[in-house]
Image 1 (tube, rainbow, N blue to C red):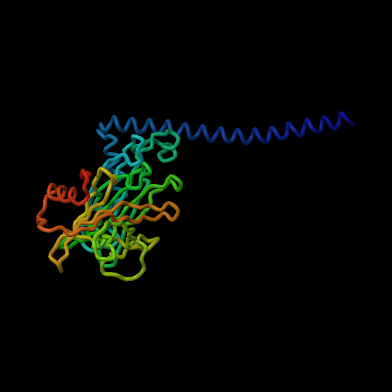
Image 2: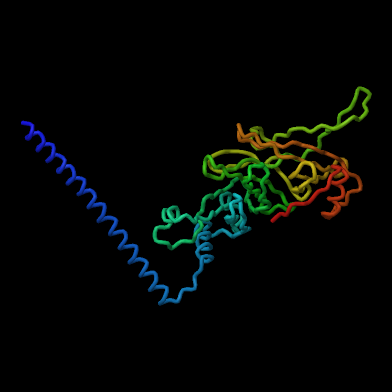
Length: 338
């Protein structure tokens, strides 16, 4: 009886191995077929290239990929920049239609390089594509508005080592440069880019501190919430949608211009130069970004809000630099815009 049980167990093991072996054999056959097809496809592509004497480079493949994504749109801006700080340049493309009012005819594309062979193979089995993968595609819409987006800055304004992509959405047909600004950021937790917020409203605020006798004794900073999450209707905001959420962008123009600077004491700051038509004066606001990681929201800490007299209407960057150094009592450097 003991021998019978041992023989039964042995035959059961052999049967199980044969079953597994059949699965392994089928898997091996499938892998062999894929490998053969890959080699055969590579040979065909090689012979085709020799016959037509193709002069294609990786640049041609990248542009072909971009044009496939944007359809008939025109390219407005195309920039390469190391967004993540690891030495790999990303490609940032903005597009818009030249066909007039068409709410959905604009795109922001971000293409990231894929050097890892396994990841590249998952995206490009036969090796016919470029080394770049489209990791983000975004379209903005607003009622009766055609947007013309352009990348303006790529800066690390949150202080997390990854740069934010700041896109200026110009309104097609505006004769005073009407625009709104969208700020995009990358999340390593979500492994994705997302729209984070917009610039603050450029309003004049009194940041002065007075004593009981009305004497100026100092200044205070003030946290300013942007219009991004506000729900009430307001002509000072641009109401937008991306198909998943509704939000607002700030309403700016040639009469309210924005710059990024690096100052001695505060580092990177946003400067806005605005015209007060009621008083026929120019006022300058200076903000420091304030990011709340718990709520994933972007607000702005207003540090200065000052009227400036005798400020030229057609001012130069040197004019603005001198005025800012007087207001802030600090050396400043303008950060390059695209």
